[in-house]
Structures are given as structure tokens and as C-alpha cells.
Image 1: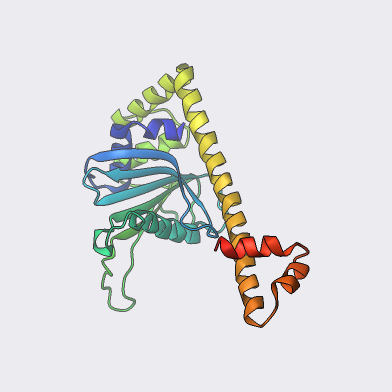
Image 2 (image 1 turned 90 degrees about the vertical axis):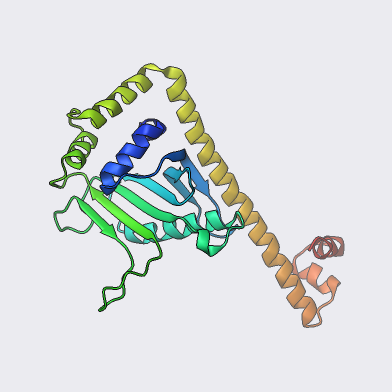
Amino acid sequence: MFGVVMSDLSIAKRVISVILADEIPDIENCELQKSVDNDYDSHSVLYDVYVRTKDGTKVYVVEMQNADNGVLVKRSRYYQSASDMDFLAKGRPYSELPETYVIFICDFDIFGRDKAFYRFENYCIGEGIALGDETYKVFLNINGKTDRKELQSLMSYISGNTPDDELTEKIQDKVDAAKHDGKLYSSFIKEYQNSLSIKEEGRKEGRREGEKKGKLEMIKSLLGIGRSIKEIAEFYKTDEAEIRGILAGA
């Protein structure tokens, strides 16, 4: 249901604004279950919610996390880098990298400080100088307490309590509508399943390409030390035509 709710751009914008205590620019799109595969042999990423502003200057990745698996901090680091590489794949210069927020909404306190909100950015140790790379990582503990009324209401609602302000009531209306709209809910489930299927196919294709590249490099190495095509074919228990075909396709 989180994805269904965040598909409403007005809700997505307001939720992010409440979490960050900052009004954000208008949203251009909100992608659910966005898959990022930056390289055939790298770890894939599947974002719960990926939001980009209309002016392209800000990106927000929002994840729901119900269990502390001990790797969330490193995961936030990888999510950040994956987002940057996905953006640069479009041929843009480094100067155009957007201000990026990776936000985890957690059902636990990852740092054990009894806080509701943790926000991180890069600083120079000892000098307190902000690096200014415009990358931020946010961890929200929905069981924590905060003086920010709207944030407290949002966390309370996510925790399972009844809505008690305008935003949470709007979210509840969206949830109720989705529950009674079989087409909408089925569409979301289908989209989610398709994204998982695409991700798995990407992994399989990546493994196949990796194996093919590795075999090609090995064949080249064997040729480089004076092994003949015949000897290499015998090594791989195949015929010479297949080895020549691999080299021809390089």
C-alpha cells in the first residue's frame, strides 16, 4: 500500500516535505519499484519509491524498512551511488548531479539513541566544513518521539494508529480507495511482479555476459602464451569452430 499511496504526487511531495521539514519543489514523476542495473556484474538496486522534481535538481529515494538486518548504513551508501550512476548514464556532466536524499522509514531505532529522525551529510572531521556534495541520508524511526507535530502524526499513522491530521487522513482515503479499487490494486501488484521479473532477468543476463567475457579473456590469454586453437578447444572440451566463433564475436 505504501507504493499505491506514494503514486499520488501530492501525497508523495507532502510526505517527503514533512519528513525533511522542508518544502520541496514540484514533483515530475514518482516511480515505484524502480530497478537500477548499472553494470552486468554489479549488485542490482530496487527502490521502493523514486521521486524526481520537475526541475531535475533533486532526487528522493524512499524505502520502508521493517527489520534491522545490520547492513542498512552500507545499503544507503550503495543506493546513493547507484542513483548517481543511473543519472550520469544519460550523458550529463558531474555538475548536473542532483541533490539527492536517500530516506529509510524504519520500524526500529537503527542507532539506539531514542531519536525519531537522523540526517547525515559529509563533513570534514575536526573542521566541521560541509563537503557540499549535496548527498543526504535520512533514517526515520517511527517509534521515536519528536516535537514536530506533523512528523509525529505521520509516524504514528505508519505505526498503525488512526489518522489525526490532514495529511494522514488524505493518506487513509487513498488507502481505502485502493482497497476498493480492484483494478488499481491489481495493476500495482502486476507492476511490482514485473519489476521483480525484469530484475531477475537482468541478473541472469548479466551472469551470462560475465561468463562469456571471462571465457573470451581466457582464450585470449591462452593464445598469448602460445596455445593453439586446437589446444584451447581441447581444454574447453569443445571443437575449434566454437573457439573461433567466440573470438570472431569479440
